[in-house]
Amino acid sequence: MAGTAADPSDPSVRVLHLGGVDQLRVRVAYGPAPDSPARDVFLLDVPLEVADTFDEEPYLRALEPVLYAAAEAPLPYSVHLHRHHTSLGSPAGTVEIRMDLTTGNGSGRLSTAAVDAVATGFRRVLDHAGAPRRLELRHDDAIDRARAQVQEAYPEMEPAELTVSDEEHRPAQGSWSIGLRRLTDLDRYVVVVGFLDGHPGSAHVHHHRRSEVIDSVGSEVS
Image (cartoon, rainbow, N blue to C red; front, side, top):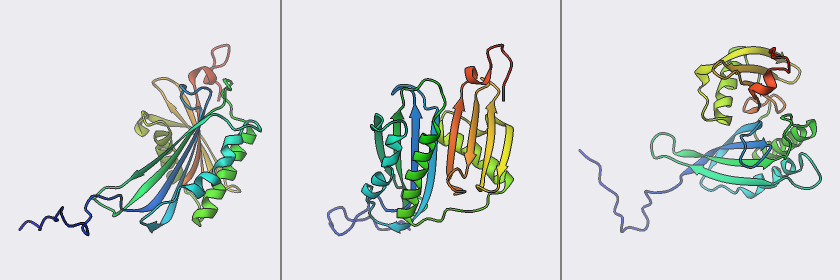
C-alpha cells in the first residue's frame, strides 16, 4: 500500500530540505593562472557532529593562512561553498569548501612556505571541528586512498588508469608518499596521504606534467 503523501498546504511539514551535516570536505588548489589546471591540490575530509545548520565563517577564518602562501599580500582566489543532501540513504549530508588560488608561478613547484600555510589552515579547521588527527594507515589503504584522492583533485581521472610508480612510508609523520602514473600521457601524480600530521583524511596531490617528468635530454626522471 502506498504511503500517505505529505500535504503541501501544511506549513509544519517540510519535505524539501538540506538535512543535517556530518561531513566537511575542504579542497585548496593552487595554479599558475586563473584558467590553468591546478598543480597542487590539498584535501581534507573532516567528520562532524550531526547538525541541522552549518556556519562556514569559523572555517573560512581558519583557512585564511592559505591566502598568504607566497607573499605578505593575499593571493588572488575564488571560494565556493557547496552543501549536498539526498533523501536516499543517510539523512545527513556533506559541505564542501573549495578554494582556488592563483600563484602566478609557472615553475610548477609550490614553495615550502605555501605547504606550511595550508597545514596551518587545516590544523585550525580540525581544532574547530574537534576531529582526531592521527590514525595509522596500512599500505593497501594508503594506495587506495592515493588513487581516490587523485580523482578527487582531478575528476577527469579514473583510478583504474593509475599505476604505482614509487612509494615511501614515513612512519614518523604517519604518512605515505605514493607516486602514480597514467601511461596514456606519462603524467605523474605524487600523493602524500596523511600529509597533515598523519590525519588519514588529508592529502597533498602534486601533478607533474609530462614536460616535468622528462628531462632535457629526453630521459625519464623519477
